[in-house]
Structures are given as C-alpha cells and as structure tokens.
Length: 421
Ligand code: HEC
Ligand code: HEC
Ligand code: HEC
Ligand code: HEC
Image 1 (cartoon, rainbow, N blue to C red):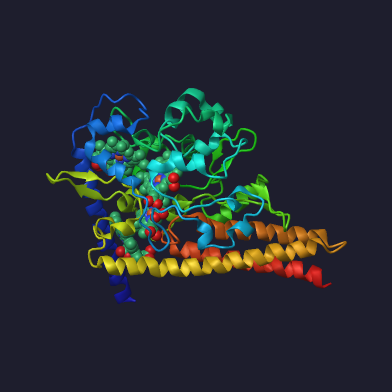
Image 2: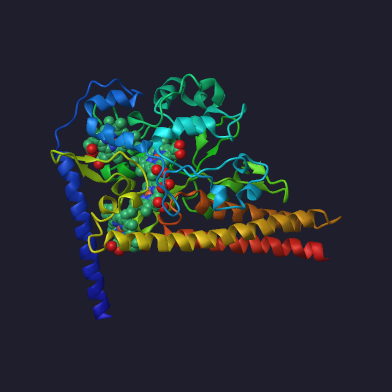
C-alpha cells in the first residue's frame, strides 16, 4: 500500500510537470505583444488574411493535399462503403445510403458539400453550417432565419471554404467561436465562452463543427443534443425525450437517428481530453520557418502523417513507429468490433422485418425491439461516424460497441420469438 501511495504521488508530480510545461509554452505566447490588424471584420477570403500572416496561410494551403491515406483515415475521399459494406443496407431509405466518403481537408469543404449526392432541392442552409467562412457574415445579418433558406439558393452567396474567419477575430487574431450552435450550447450548459482559457479555446474552435448535432424540426437550426450529457447513452435519452428521428428504416420500420461526426464528444472523456490536451496540440503542431520563426501549422489532417511533430513533443520516450503501432493497435480492435456491431444491427433489422409480417404480432414486443434497434444503430454509428476509428477514446468506443451488439441481439431475440410462435 505504501509503495502504491508513493507511486501515485510520483505519478501526480510527473503529471503536474507535464501540465506546467504545457502551461509555460502558453504563457510565452501570452507575452507576445497584442496583434492589431486592418483585416475587415469576418473577412471571408483567407487570401486577404494571408497577406498579413503568410506562414499560417501557406500551411493552410497544404489542406489541398488529398492523396495520402492512412490505415483508417487520411485525406483521400474514398467511399466508406469499401471498408463498411453494410452501410447502404443500414442507412436504407436515407441519404447516407447514396454516397458517404472519408473526409478530407478544410479547403475542399464547399466543393464536397455541393457535389455530394445527399444534397437535394429540399436541403436547408443548415447543411452549409460547417462548411464556409462566408457563414460568419450571413449569421450576423440573418440570425436564425439563416437556416430555413434552401441550400441551393445560396450557391452564389457561399464561395469560400472553411477559413480564418471561422476561428479568429480579424482585429486581434484572438481565437473566437463563431458557429451559433456551439454558442447556444455553451449558454445552455452555463459555459461562459468569454472566460474560456486559451487551452480550452484550442479545442472549442474545432468542437464548434466537429460534433454531434441535429436540425431542430420547424426552424432547421443546427442544435447539439447535449442537455443530458455528452455520452452516446445520454444523447439517445435526449433524442427519445424529444421524439426526434432522421428517417424511418424501411425494413424494420424503425425511426432512426444518424450520428454526425462526434469528435468533440468522443475526445472529451478520453485520456487526452481528460488530461487537458487540446485538439490543436495534436492537429496543429508548432513548426518553424527558415528563420526559425515558430508558428502553428494550419494543415488540419491526420497526425499520423507527421507523428514527430504531432505526438513526440509530449511522448519523447517513444519512437514515431512505436506510437503509430499503438494507434493502429487500438484502431484495428475498434474497426473489427464495429464491423461485428454492424452485422448484429443488420440481423436485427431483418428479424424485425420478418416479425412485422406475422399476422397479429404482439405490437408491444415489436415496439420494444424497434427501440433497441434505434439505440444500437446510433451506438455503432457514434463510433463509425467519428473520424479517429476509436483513437480519441478507445474505452468509450469499445464500450459503446459492446452495448450496441447487446442491444441488437436483444432486439433480434424479441423479434425471433414472434416469428417462431
Ligand atoms: C492526442 C492527439 C489527438 C487529439 C488531442 C485529437 N486528435 Fe484527432 N486524431 C488523432 C489521431 C491519431 C487520429 C487518427 C488519424 C488516422 O487514422 O489517420 C485522429 C483523427 C482525427 C480526424 C480524422 C482525420 C482523418 O485522417 O480523416 C479528425 C477530423 C479529428 N481527429 C479531429 C479532432 C478534433 C476535432 C479533436 C478535438 C476535439 C481531436 N481530433 C483531438 C489524434 C488526436
Ligand atoms: C479551425 C480554426 C482555425 C482557422 C480556420 C484558422 N486558425 Fe489560426 N489558429 C488557430 C489556433 C487553434 C491557433 C493557436 C492559437 C494559440 O495557441 O494561441 C491559431 C493561431 C494563429 C496565429 C497565431 C500565431 C501562431 O501561429 O500560433 C495566427 C497569426 C493565425 N492563427 C492566423 C490564421 C490565418 C491567417 C488563418 C487563415 C488562413 C487562420 N489562422 C485560420 C485556429 C484556426
Ligand atoms: C467551420 C467548421 C469547421 C471547423 C471550425 C473545423 N473543422 Fe475540421 N472539418 C470540417 C469539415 C466540414 C471537414 C470535412 C471537409 C471535406 O471532407 O470536404 C473537416 C475535416 C477535418 C479533418 C480531416 C482532414 C483530412 O485530411 O482528412 C481534420 C483532421 C479536421 N477537420 C480537424 C480540425 C481541427 C483540429 C479543427 C480546429 C483547429 C477543425 N477541424 C475545425 C469542419 C470544420
Ligand atoms: C500535449 C501533450 C500530448 C500530445 C501532443 C500527445 N499526447 Fe498522448 N498522452 C498525453 C498525456 C498527458 C497522456 C496521459 C498520461 C500518460 O499516460 O502519459 C497521454 C497518453 C497517451 C497514450 C496512452 C493512453 C491511451 O489513450 O491509449 C497513448 C497511446 C498516446 N498518448 C498516444 C499519443 C499519440 C499517438 C499522439 C499524437 C497523435 C499523442 N499521444 C499526442 C499527452 C500528449
């Protein structure tokens, strides 16, 4: 016991040191004289900002790199159906059964959203919400009316992909959250964004887009389902209480929920999130120009493309190869379990489909099975739609998949009892 206590004290001290080191580099930055620019407020064109900040702008242009693949990520926009063949079946009756690709750099956001088959004449502006620096001015001018305007009516208003105005105040260059959904969520959760630390802001500017959301029925406002908490269970409870669904699956006639890209929620309770590491720590490592001037990389991409800068700043005791092996160890386990969860989900849809064909089937039992299917599919989708293949939070990813498989198999058992009667 004594040894254990000593060990814990050392651990705490070491942890404290790591934080102090991280703290130092932040306060050094605080010491940099305040910036004052003449860039117009919310300027949508990143090129204009680039004239004042060429280093950041040059690294931003690297987001155009779209050929590198990693084992489960990278920037090549390949179809997710290649590695998850059941997706079209599981999303049957919904846009994600038409086309669903691996994500790529921020500079492609406008091009990709305008060409994806999921967009149709009924799509609202809400689909533009996370795609463009032009939004910042539009939100200021239109408020909540922004969301209802049809997507296609904005094709000549929205030209610029995600850019400087999405995250920075033009005059001071301070980090700034601009997306209305995140500002609203913070208010509902009593988080005062004006008092957030710089380290928190280095996550919040990403979290404003990389999160789970739904379009509020009626107003089409992009809204985060966080009132009960950030875990998948708590979000399903929230969606059930407001009786929200994205579509009905034609086989099991279940009212379904599509998970979006819950990077923030997944990361938050993971080892790094819980230890105060920010998204920018791994995804925006410091670089130096030829005169050794330090700046933050604005090439937001897979850290596995540059483990040396992205991870070894903190994990000096491991080689880049060891770190990559560690990431892939987690990802392979999560991927294989996720495929099993998708198979279980598919079996459940099919079993309920068969049960629905039984005359005078017990409707309560069917409803019970459908509720389980709804939850199970959101659970595996929470992991599948999140873009790190479990790395951001291995334990939450595997726990959520285990619950998903259990819920699907329970639904299948209930349905098979009806069919075998
Ligand atoms: C400890 C380092 C670390 C932190 C912190 C971190 N990530 Fe990641 N992120 C990774 C790794 C590693 C991957 C997996 C990349 C791969 O598979 O190629 C990843 C993948 C991603 C991807 C998909 C990249 C791709 O290649 O398609 C996105 C998007 C992402 N992270 C966003 C975020 C956001 C947003 C946050 C904060 C809420 C965050 N990350 C925090 C390390 C990190
Ligand atoms: C997705 C959010 C995001 C976007 C978009 C963005 N930045 Fe940044 N920027 C950051 C973060 C995070 C930091 C680190 C801030 C810190 O640690 O204080 C940063 C830091 C900076 C700094 C401070 C010096 C440095 O390098 O750390 C400058 C200058 C800057 N960005 C310029 C730009 C320019 C120019 C653009 C557009 C081409 C841009 N940023 C787009 C998030 C963003
Ligand atoms: C305005 C919304 C928005 C903000 C802010 C934002 N992202 Fe993104 N991010 C996106 C979208 C949309 C995509 C997918 C673009 C595509 O595939 O066309 C994306 C893609 C990515 C990718 C995948 C790139 C690749 O090469 O596969 C990473 C990594 C990423 N973002 C990290 C971050 C980090 C880190 C931050 C904060 C510093 C951040 N993002 C802030 C919307 C945003
Ligand atoms: C800002 C510092 C920082 C950065 C950058 C960072 N980590 Fe970590 N990492 C930590 C801390 C703190 C812990 C938890 C305490 C510990 O075990 O050292 C941790 C724990 C881990 C663990 C063990 C726990 C787990 O979740 O499996 C792995 C693996 C890991 N990091 C990999 C990476 C990889 C890969 C990268 C780059 C993509 C990275 N880290 C970037 C600080 C960092």
